[in-house]
Length: 462
Image (cartoon, rainbow, N blue to C red; front, top):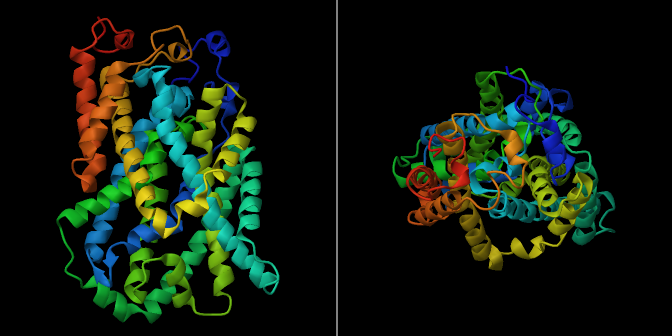
């Protein structure tokens, strides 16, 4: 494998205004081993949000998809997710650059501000929402331990957030051990729940899910799109993770580091979510788990599970990417940016966002940013594999007066075209946005904006 330092002018990168945390990672800087990577994706995949997706196939006690359709939809989704991960992480893995620098080749140094915020802002909002849910669970533990003498979700929320801010200061060193611990706890708990469901609720699961007629129409493909949308924010910033992974792995082996743990965790959690809903008629896993477990320790068990899940999910999906965005925009060091990210999550008013009265607005927010993430990933892949044939001058990405300076009108226009098309059929928004944006970017790059500096190094260089 080619060294990541090849064709990179170290002095030119050092002269960049970006913080050193955004500079290319050398071989010696990387600390994440393949087993750490596997644990990271297991820890991220096992959470109540993914369990809820599995439970969503049961609506008012009636299955929209049967067991075979659900598992097939999950496998198709996981296959696509793993493939997109392995494709989009390659530049970050080979050259050690983060997502916010990768964006420059398609959107320009100034245009990256827009495209990076589409990843950073939603992550900060979800950081706050996840932490509020975790604070609620932590408060339940505190009430049990203190026999009801302590009861303050706000204090628990702030305490949990401060703890996560401290963890985030350690960067990927913290991610490694948090995800390792979380993955072991999660899988042990889920195996226990799976055993209970199989021994005590087989009849309900068989009647309400296994034997259901289901559908091979829009509900089937719609579920695939939901699964993909759930990972859209993570695999669009794949370079943020792959740049930490030790070098020497082939593309196939690295692809396996996504497919195996995501199948193991995401697939297992989705199945358990559907089984829980089929057995209890309750689609909220946090409410369904106590019904299944039904013992004196259930509240503590569920609450501890939720708290650990929140920390694990935030560490992977909702902290590192926005920290890099803030570092890029403010020129601050990594640690101050991590603190700002945590404080912004505190100020996202998550207690208001998760109320039923806010559900419509929150869903609209999710719909809007998700519609842009599909086009962004498509543009990045078309750029790297088709237009540049996997040859990128990384030094130019750090040169603010170079060919990537300013805005790339082709990239920005293609992103907006893809997002607009995605709203035509909301249930299929992700795939529509991907196809339309990728096609639009190729055509705009070829036929429009003559003399654009962004054509340099591409198959359309003039």
